[in-house]
Image (cartoon, rainbow, N blue to C red; front, top):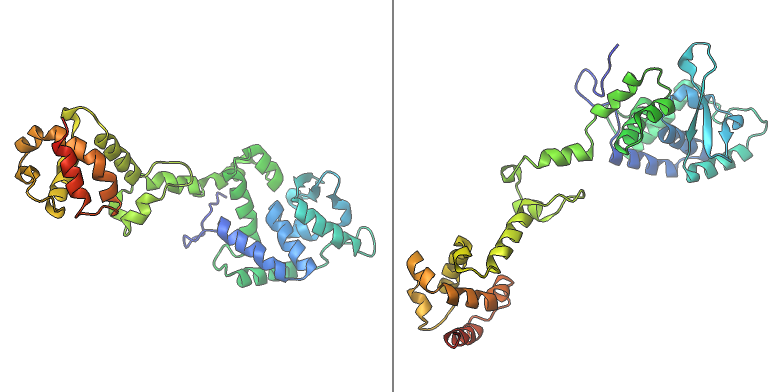
Length: 300
């Protein structure tokens, strides 16, 4: 039967990266057995029955991995090796040291007890919904592996899937890359705070719309050809002339495009000197405007 990453109500069945991190953080306040049990399932993506069947003999501390028996093979003894994080290995080594007899289960609980322990940590972490289950941790492991560019056949082996088509379902989950690609077509109309949204470059290195406009304006301000002076210079000049006190400067006579073209070389020279100060609000309108105007009169 074909299954997806969403249930019949459209709710996702996997934990996001932030939910997974909150779950792991919540385990730190639990007992050693509960903490190691929850972290083991999150780190391996194994089924809850497979984790409860583990003994000290299933842990290879030298190779840094756990040997898990695939219990869904219906009588066939099939094992798979899954690497473990160093911190989890140290915690499991301490737990094994407290076991009285070799071969005893690490977590001597029933399946329902193990399920309840995970649900309790989920509730403490604030994770609610269809994903707040041991199966949600398993799905989260598969999606995290795919989005971390782990080869699909390796994810299949770690999860114990008989068919790689089952593993490929995890590729349909939306990751941060997919959302970032989609954001490039949303434009400015979907943003309430355009300034804050555009000014922040995304973590994948895409150039924001604001940066593109700023780079274009920067190039226009530094062009040397009179014909390359675009409407941005005319707009800036118009605002400068209205807001700055330049006395009886002949710049006040610039009222249309024709006048602007005749004074183009003066505009360019003037902008080079004062544009940066004006745009950063560090320009003194009373003194520096006169000095710039005087310099402009003496310019060739």
